[in-house]
Amino acid sequence: MQLRMTAKKTTVTEAMYEAMESRLGFLDKYLKEDTTVNATVDIVSPTQKKVDVLFTYNGTLIKAEAIDDGFYSAVDEVVEKVKKQLFKQIDIEKNNKMSKHDFIGNSSNKVEHEKEDGLIIKRKRFNMKPMSEEEAVLQMEMLKHDTFMFFHSSLEAMCLLYKKKHGKYGLIEGVLEE
Image (cartoon, rainbow, N blue to C red; front, side):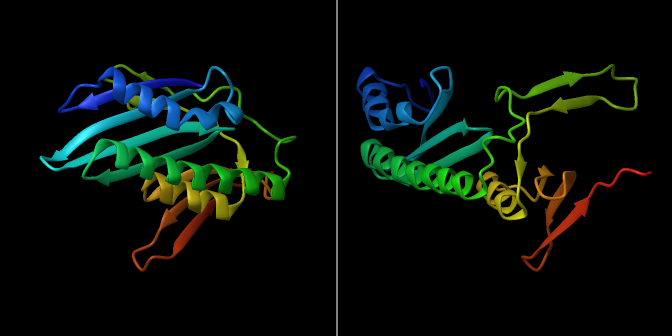
């Protein structure tokens, strides 16, 4: 694991970096050596600090956020959230036995900008892994998005999950013409 720590409205001290690194040290057991864990510290108000942690585990985005009066207590809170999400994802993978059917190469996203005069002015590529509808809902909720595109593991098709106004979800399934 490689920790990359940034700060907004403050600076990262050596003590802050070491505290974050030691509390996230358990991730070394679960993540590949070249996996980058992004941590951000922000001052929300004069009394409140916000800590965000973001990384991918086997192609699944793990994101946690905590706001507390002190930096160290926010770190403790965010680490507990990371553990909960990571272990939940590990359980999902064990139950679905998805490790043999994994599309993921690396976890980088690529954005390409086209010419301004063309019809398509932005193109984004991202790695995907097959997942169930339940996993897609979890991912969409963790990202706090209203839509989520994924490869459906049982349908073997591209799907678009979206949130409806009443809190339920809709699913658009891609089908190839024959």
